[in-house]
Length: 154
Image (cartoon, rainbow, N blue to C red; front, side, top):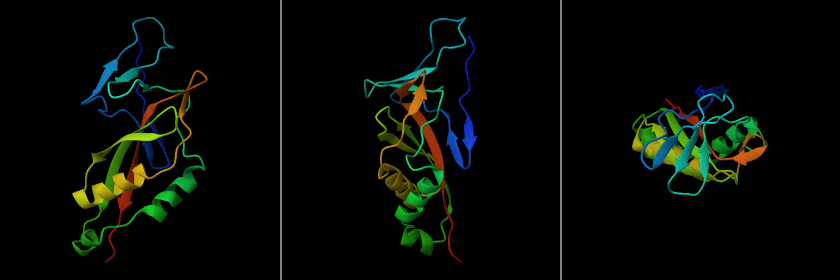
């Protein structure tokens, strides 16, 4: 069986499983070992929605990449305490874009400091619905990861 490694790097975004099959998620491999058309699927025990790891088209922010970064920039509030303490860095946040476009299961994948981590998660949770991923002409749920850089002012 051929397993596709789902790493798509595009202008600062990373769409990948990267250990996402932890906790309440269970990796399920297709039964047929001869078909290359099978998708690797993760069953999400907290919902009745399969999470596809390999998709034909990745999910996307409805107004495009530039507007995604504008949304993040407009809504991100660098915590005053973090500024005062000189805390900066790149916070990785992973989440699932559901087939409905809703953002769920937001988690920190790369921590810098709890102050920055919490703010990055807050902003991701506040995003509007996305255009979901597509697999064989159907909207599907899939994991997504992006990084938010907090740069301190000197």
